Length: 270
Image (tube, rainbow, N blue to C red):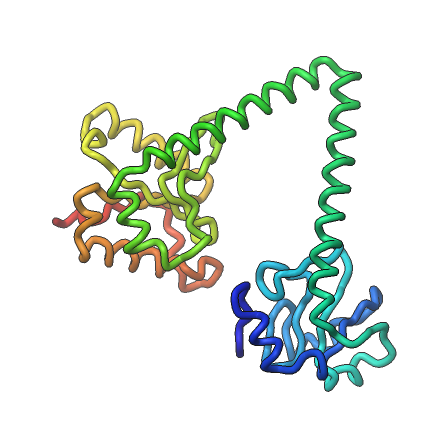
């Protein structure tokens, strides 16, 4: 099976000559179960078909939610019978992107209008909205400050260990649990894991107690914390131990994945 990514989809489309061999299916009543057995939904297999509205995963294009637009190889048209479709063209991608932009803008305007009307009619709601906006502004400002003040150890760890996981790694990710706002040094949502780079002050009794409370709160929502000390970041065996722990959680939905929520301390035996 060949995978489509955001960087290489153009070359892959040309390789399979989709303009000549494929069709865009727009029929809202299409029965996908007919071809599900051979080619599972949301997958790209060979040169047959894949979802158009799986944007980031496949083409990098978006259509309106709820529509079952597919790009399908002509060899499968007979299985689907009489359906609404038209030949695929590369220009479709630009059209889909423009549609997506218009759709998001329209929905955002509708939402903002509803919020403003409710704020005008309900002082309590207006107060709550203003409070939430101030909170979000504070979170954004704190994130920027934390990113600007990132330590050399954090930057080194990302470059030499975490960069391989690409955009899945979020630096200074904010999460709220039981009214507490936490900023995680690194967070990988697909693995449900937080990575903390601990400086010397984490060795104090007071800070250690706060760290244990923080880790317990994260564990309560299913997030595992992995802690590595500043000096351990520059040790290849410690970085390898961290990568090995992440690899065990790489396919989190599989039965073989590590789903423990206990805090892992890298290099504990050192």
